[in-house]
Image 1 (cartoon, rainbow, N blue to C red):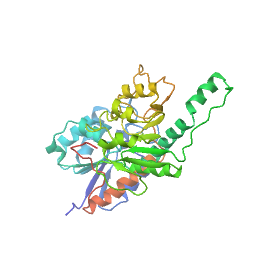
Image 2: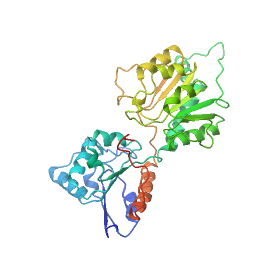
Image 3: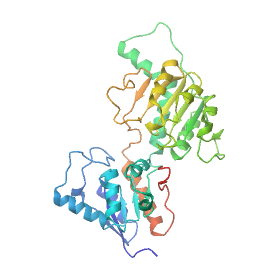
Image 4: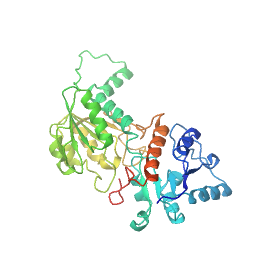
Length: 351
């Protein structure tokens, strides 16, 4: 039987109208929200807020007192692994944290909490909220590669009008492989099919999926790549996916493959990717994520003529805070009714 009152604390920056949306879920819900204790957003959905923001010692005490009253948190405290570790130790009534990111497993893993502590509360992610903007970005990457946008930009900068016109590739009729057929991967597949592509992909639990030509696990990835014209990675960063895109996997691609990464940078061996770009296995790479972020200044990816560098912003949209709040409200209704929360972080695989 759920408690008569459920206390939700807002741990990250959020607009007042979204806070009211959460308050309206049920009369039994009390929402603790003190905007002066939260760093101001620098842009829509800036969940960490202004890094120059600092609480006074009195404000810091109030912030943690507020969080320690709650059974439910909206966001990780201070959006950090250290904040998660601290609240886990200090709040014995904590039952559930809703994370802003789809890939919140990395924060949970980095918190260093043991299995016993992690079993005391749930962490749900915002998986799915970012599916459409990520899928649109993946489509941008595919189209850039097929339509030679990088070369066009270089010629425009140099004011070159080539004597011989170079044809571009048709997306329609080409084949896409998506690693990670979750919500982001399936949305990517939907857009790709709308462009006339056929789609195969990988999934941890192999099963038929409507509209997907062939499904394999990651062990069967190399076999899928032989017929791929483009590859989109949506996989999270776990110890099971680290450097999945190795020299061997890039070598399994046919020459001229377009590669897009909207998952996590650790899934790709960046040295192997650079080699594949150099030998033509990969004709173009559109990268929103990197093994080390921010991307180091000395990384050759910055200046590579066949690479587009995006600073891990492809999931951002002006609608993100509203969409996450709506997802949280739906989850809160499920929580209050004693149901199973969706998108709970797996504390073995951390995704």
